[in-house]
Image (cartoon, rainbow, N blue to C red; front, side, top):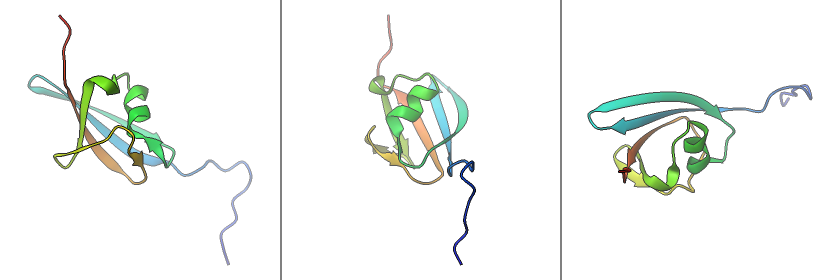
Length: 83
């Protein structure tokens, strides 16, 4: 018998760890997003400009329009700096 959730139940969320690398330091941010949230939107939610960043999973670059469907650790490397 399938599980029935009440109408007030929250939808499932996916755990995301975003590692922001700056110089020699790494700042970690943790958040939970709705399944299907784009990497671009997750970065914006932590105040990071997605267009100025390279994003990787396990050292492999991924497109900013990749949907997040499972728990994931994203490594974010700024690709330019002001000045």
